[in-house]
Length: 586
Image (cartoon, rainbow, N blue to C red; front, side, top):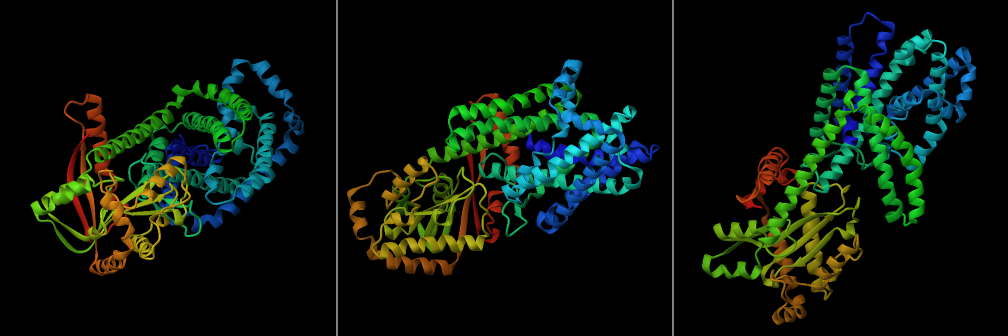
């Protein structure tokens, strides 16, 4: 729904601002207003690649002038048209409204909810400002300005009921109309920018959690991590915005869709806050229940009114959310099936090495980085490669990325290195843990960090240290704690899970050969690096149901073919890449 908000907010905000022209130019054809809206939207999305940092200095003066303008116009209208409107601050009039209007009053809540839309954009601003600054700005400037603006508009309407459809612009005094109109248009661009940034952030986090196809993420700021740009998503949002504006044209239908989107976002956020209060803040259930009851009951009241307008435009975000959720679920499901196949079809190191005398495996100079999702044993992709091409590099490092459910992983907890087999094999495994907000480095910096981590691992062995020195001692959660404890207690890995006596004896003398390993590692590094990863085709089994075949073969296959390749997403240079083709039957 927030992604749908990223489509509807620019459409609704810019279109409503441009429609203000018709207040002064009544003969202006609707097509021209639509054309101007589309031009502004194209310009808005075309500037996204610049990044908020370069144009963000304009946001504060624009919003500040906008808030001062609407509050000034509101004060003027209150004084000029109906000073008694101030009494509407009394909660008594809420009761009186519903008593007099009944069902019509309840229906009107679907339109009244538009008065509080835009508040969800504050979550996106957390990528640019602190929580305290947002609280201060909202309580001292934004909220009072909005109250004065709406009270002034109500005061104007009390004397001009015929201007209900264009009340905002009709209530602006003639002498300041065009300056306020220009500021209003610029303010809609700023508001749209915040929601677009929120869409980028959410998709980035979903991608890190394997819930969205791979897309290109560009960090537009070196200082603020939350400022990102995703080209593919940006242009798709632009296309959907243009389709909404051109296809519906009716601002009331777009408003119904916008209101339903925002109130669902707020209600879901309130429900999720229940989990945060209980599980993260460790407060009692009563406090969480009171919070959800107070805010949730108000939001449900608005939601029930907005649901009554599903047929009048409210279906737009529901359909879009269903499609996006389906894409996320299918991608996540297909990825899990692929990883499950690799885990169940991995090969033990003993079995692989037993093939050596039979197929004549050779070791060539250099370092081979094998990218895999398998945490133990040999991935089927590498076994397939060695069986058909019996040679691999003198130093092998199996690299696995693990994305944690925490925003960031500290640098000293990021790399986990362990050995595979005896020292003379020169085979290692490196698990790289990243939070869903951690940015990946370029390939050269990544190579440097990875090889340096292996070197430190060998250096500690040479100095008589323990392998646990190279393993994070502050796991992210209890599950990770148990797994890492097992990793730390096992110096070597033979793929079969057993720990024979010969291997336990080898641990006592591991420092003897570490200096030679360090020398071999340095020589291999000078010879160059090669990257190897699987280019897999995931297919459903012949015995699978029609639905499973459709999901895996058609939808997931389409997404895999049209998203960014793993090598491109990881920044692997193509000149050093070896791709191994395989077909997985899941």
